[in-house]
Amino acid sequence: MKQLVLLLSLIFLPSLCVAQNAFYVWQQLWSSNVLEAVCAEPATTLYPVATVVPASGTSTLVQIPWNEVAATDHRFVPVIRIPLQAFNRNDLEPELVRLAHALKPFDEIQLDLDCPESRMNEYADLISNLRKQIPQPVLSITVLPCHVGNRSFQRLAETVDSYVLQVHGLAVPETFDDPAELMNRKTADRAIRQAEAWGRPYSIALPCYAYELNFDPTSEKFMYLTAEGPSRRRPTLKKRIAADPADLIDLVSTFQTLEHAEQIIWFRLPVKGDRLCLPRPTLCNIEAGELPMSGIECVATAISPTTLELALYNTNVIHATRAELTFTWDKPSGAFDLYQNIDRKQIVPGQLPTTLSVDLPAPGQSVKLGWFSSTNSPKTTVNLK
Image 1 (cartoon, one colour):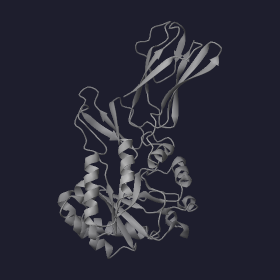
Image 2: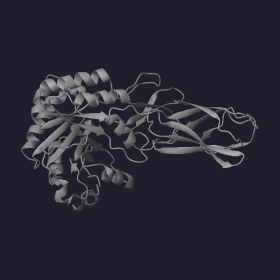
Image 3: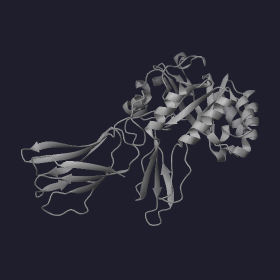
Image 4: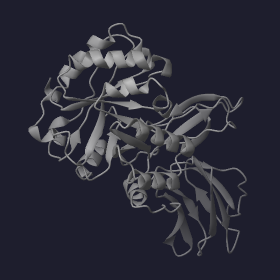
């Protein structure tokens, strides 16, 4: 297949030392922004999702523009995503063998399987059988904290060359007020200690993204979550959860002290316009051990001698869905016009608004609020929700 014709520059030896932290590239539609982010990133290892195995039928490979990315110095490790429904396929083994041969130009492939703890021995059997039939010399898998704490884990770990410990995950809350978190620090620390105790080569996947949880506006019961694509247009109660940057900084520092951890893999590569992922400059700060600033600013621009235009800029915030703005004006009376998508509640004609509510723009983007007849910028307080 044409998309699998690769130049030799895509393939590196598994032992090559990579200076930069690695990234997952989880988009299944490679837009120009995804390609730009991949090409702009300094040489590292990238883990693009290559396919998602369906519950039945033939898996379709993601259309990755290999000719374009061949110009980079990245090492690529394609990931085969295996949902739990696909794990139940009677023909899963031959389907994975077929995919491995389709991806044979790569020196390594990775399996990302939703494996229940009760089926870890079954997973180990599957991998043992695969190793005899696939052309790749290196095979890795992803695992969760609950896996490395299971007594069956050693057998699973010994069937692969290395594994990726994903310290992030989500227990879906039933209602809006139920607690939810993307990464529990105690769970992450315990899992890393257990991984070190097993003594097998592993990497650590850290989250630089957020989940957007959507709840029914009436019952406040959970409906669905958004992880990458745009939110559905149906009105919902929204809550975003992201990892604490301080925890990420601590884990990056902890990584330097570990004996068996080989690399950090960020999930996922920041792409321009991605509203649920930290922008690259913010992630650079975290990698350098620096806490990022809040990243929300309301800016006034004079558009005439007596008129201001207000805009809300978002530098790096991914954990909030809306911004509640409070204004204090030198002269509260005046004309104004609010632009689209601005909540117009509590607006009094002839009085400059003192509160506005607006959907938070994506990191690195801004939204214009409206124009206001004032010669002085208002004092502004931003409350994130």
